[in-house]
Image (tube, rainbow, N blue to C red; front, side):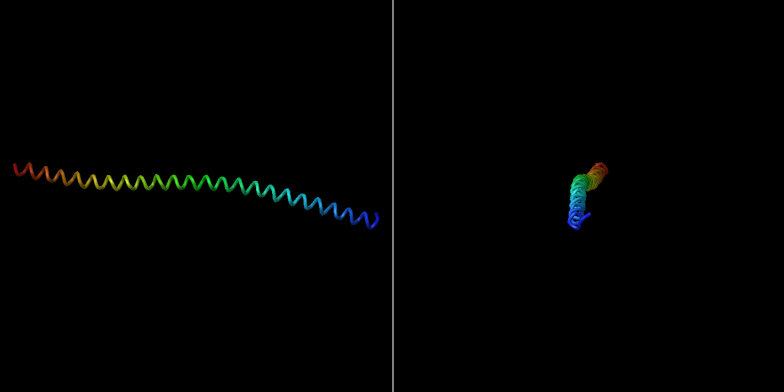
Length: 84
């Protein structure tokens, strides 16, 4: 094998390696996009659960206020019955 052929073979090997690295990079980009899609979906789910939690907290707070109002009304009614 002549020196020129050896050089040409060396460059062909480098070209193949470059092609392989480019393929690996493209595969990694695809995988990265897939994972980012999953993360975006999960973040959406987390936001949904946060909203549900906030709604539940508001409902619970409202329930507590209604319980207080109920007790106050019961006391007033009880006092009025005692007076009569």
